[in-house]
Image (cartoon, rainbow, N blue to C red):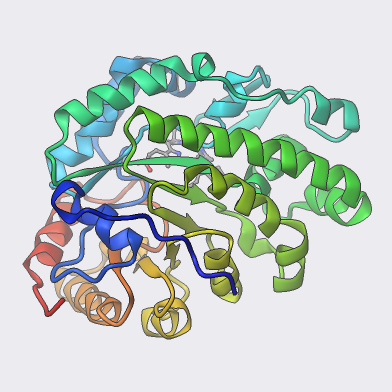
Length: 352
Ligand code: 1CP
């Protein structure tokens, strides 16, 4: 296993979350929530009632405001840029929309060499409002709060492009992956450079760490992940080696070591994995992030508290721990419960 390249961390100048994600144990784990900016917040729903999702993703003022909403409300240790994994694809001219209640839908699915060749490189001017928003967000965050940039990993992006939209079975994706490996690698290489460049641009604009979302990589077994996907995720993460790098996928319990070895400093742990097992398997090499079940937030408080404490205890055994959910906040979640979880995590002090 290739050890991760850890960035040089100067503690006084780094927010706690960047330090933890780089691989350092802190007395109190920093906390944020995947999908913290979104439909669980009434202030988000009010804003989005007036603007389509993709319009909001290309408007610097809206990006800034929506990114800051959960930070103000929950006092989390990080903002995650309000955007979507398909934003860089839209920015290079792919005809797609984010359909309410469904997700990204691509007008003409990518399935041929000519389709792949049309995916051009991403330039700073393609995402100018995003980069402008990053500066504005940094201006509003406290120095101890981090700004997380993100991108979709090549496999997850490819699944939307090839299927034409969300999928449960990835039939077209896998047919191309197994049936035409040459075209598959060409597509994933294109996407790796687009994603990587997007991460690089966000870091240059002020993002202090990044997360690569390979949300659907859990659909693959380990050898296929290693041969057909991991090299491309490594290419993407290679664009952001100056900052800590979280790498996450849903249902990736079979792949944790490989998710880390793709060039991460912190491995995202979904809620199907026992945190103690995750720490035993990868916590000696990488920081870990996770892994409260988002559905647990609907249980009575004592059940939530018990699980939060258990995850924090388990996380203390790793090289670093960022508290988070094991996947995104569900839209029906009571935001006050999220705030209470942040307060609880912040109250749990242990030995560093
Ligand atoms: O109707 C709405 O309000 C739109 C819902 C929504 C939101 C708020 C979508 C559509 N995307 C987003 C924002 C978003 N997407 C963020 C914002 C910041 C935050 O986390 O607070 C992030 C990080 C994403 C990333 C994203 N988009 C992922 C990776 C994370 C994950 O959940 O695994 C994926 C897979 C997407 C695709 C996508 N975009 C939207 C939906 C509903 C989906 C999933 C569709 C599917 O199931 O395939």
